[in-house]
Amino acid sequence: MKKSIRTQLNKLAVGSLICIRWGDPSASPVEDGSPEDLVKNHKGYNYFSWGVYMGVNKQHKTIILASDKVVDEDEYRGTNKILTTLITEVEVIKSAKDMEKYHRERN
Image 1 (spheres, rainbow, N blue to C red):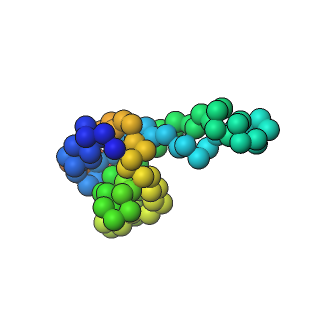
Image 2 (tube, helix red, strand yellow):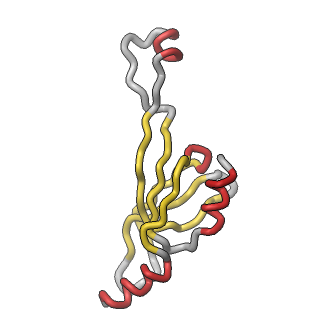
């Protein structure tokens, strides 16, 4: 993981709405499945994933994003776990403070 990505992740507040770009080297179409095709033509795919930042699991080196929040509870569901070493970009869409304000106004 690039140092700048690590720095960004360390500065994120739990509860921030974020978007991350990450590459999945395991997802790649192949023509014939031969060893040459698998190695030479391997591309991988880039994805954008967004969700509410829950933190980084240091043991497994994964960022954890949640997609659902239980109304009137501090409980999150629908998690997505992505290896931090695959992340190439981090963007904060809405800070944790702004997310709290948004939820207060909606209740």
